[in-house]
Image (cartoon, rainbow, N blue to C red; front, top):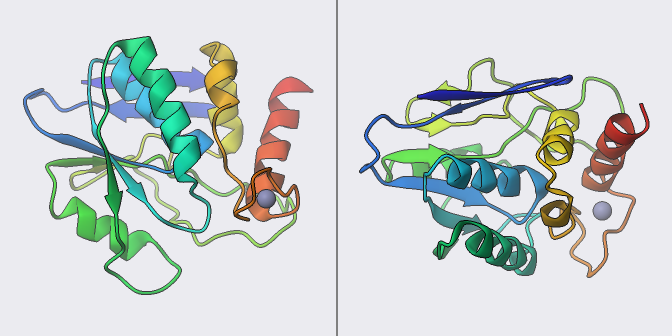
Length: 194
Ligand SMILES: [Zn+2]
């Protein structure tokens, strides 16, 4: 089954396995993309095993807050597994591929970079033109953050949004000066001020 979520910034394409007995795994960081991904899966009756992968812009406390909110909303109890990286380097793609090889279906909330310069040093994200690659499903891979923020607005998920954390600097409050902060601010302005 394919569920499409249209926004004025493009459509998220969520592919759901036909066989619901298959194990579904989702990588989550507590950020806005992967948290929306978890919401959309649960909304469609898919209960994923959640993998928290430690990286530059992930915050376990934020993920726990988001998962707690989702658990109450959908009457589930998501399991969060902490994942130790097994591949080297800053780029996460080899790590994601290594996780994909050990599960049946893997979902990630990866988004595309903005096409304009918004300041800061952009991370290395894959540029892909399909949302399914082998057993890896990436509903937002062709969208930038504006579509993700628009979906939070359209689905009335501002409360959940407020529990997410996307800053790459590991401080209690977002630093406001890293690429991830610029990107979130840019998307918020685009969605709410235009
Ligand atoms: Zn920041």
